[in-house]
Length: 326
Image 1 (cartoon, rainbow, N blue to C red):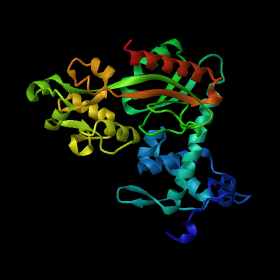
Image 2 (cartoon, helix red, strand yellow; image 1 turned 60 degrees about the horizontal axis):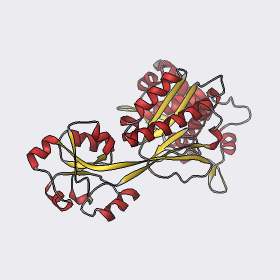
Image 3 (cartoon, rainbow, N blue to C red; image 1 turned 90 degrees about the vertical axis):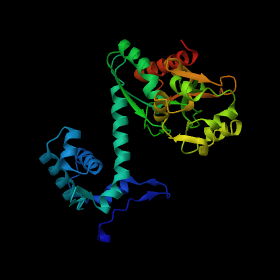
Image 4 (tube, one colour; image 1 turned 60 degrees about the vertical axis):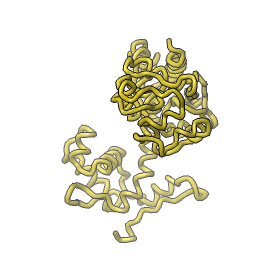
């Protein structure tokens, strides 16, 4: 790649991108500014690696996708893609543009959600961030009841074990298993969710039931791959549950739960989830009973948004009922 084609985005005080300076650098006063749809198409092609896949994802024809890319390249005066054996390969310039356009796309999505909340009643989209296990196993019935009460509400559920930034509006509301620390947030601690060691009843019939934590060394254990702050605290109390002791390692709570349900071995699981599955049996309940804090948080600017207010309240009530066994 010719170094003259590198895209350098100016920065303010060495930190935040200077989008105004970036825009002026990319366009002369006589240029026609690119349409935002072209940028969306660019991101779709960048993500999928082909015009046809991007078209399917966006509901556009392949010629339309190709035309958007051609128009964007002409407006910017840059080559964004080159044809490769297996599709379209991004140029260096395209890769440098990507993080800034992703920020703009997130901002556009937030604007749409805010605008949709100012109609009459509870309607529009609400974006919720939650961990995999909570989002898949716990939230659906809570959100189904909420949707029955407010049929014009649209739910966007982001499943991730990382903390999405509510201040940057990556989500409207977050369900977290730790206390949120960002300022300008409304937070509510709703429950302590108990954890326990469980195994499939068939596994215990075949391998026996451990009677002490020390006897876990003779069993196939299911656990984490990479440490987190919570896991480090847990290991201080239960040193036998170190990474090297696990026969199944995964950072996905869903994968760990699937291994339990398949009879792979013994692992930690939310007690309420296990109680809903008659195949799972709790072991060493008196010796292993840590808990996770459950919090619901949203940006304080959304307190007067009807869609966010009712969703926040429903999550608080629903998670409290779940943790309490109701």
